[in-house]
Length: 207
Image (cartoon, one colour):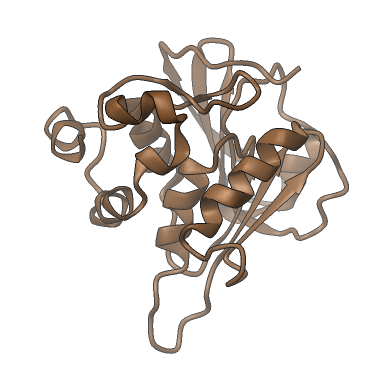
């Protein structure tokens, strides 16, 4: 799967390639779908009608996110935890004298939040404090661990809440699906963002 994604240009970062190899997709899909875990298809999580992202889409999102060791990243829509797990493998990489990063993953569906927690604990990310999965609304303003180096939404929304703009640090980025596009917003000052749009995606929507 990784070789195919690299060959087709979806992923190129050495850290993303490493992390996708360490976080096994089969741990995040339903039992019935495990046989297809390394095919480029969206697959059922087996919980709450959600699907694990197609690997090519996940790779594209991660390349736009550009997670780095030591960063604090807010993931909106934990789902089964697969993409949060890949991010965690990058931001928590051991480096002498470096701070360990953190992922805060919000999941509106309680059953899915429990499933994501269980899946991520396979890698000891919950007990080691690398990931915190929080059951809350996707647009909750109660998440108070800002500033973040990046915010990424894994389901579609209609409009970016203002507090996301405020919660990301200068130099940080917001990755979000709106309509049929993925928007990448890089914060260039306290109030200004540089925006790129990539068209041609279809994401499930937050209700």
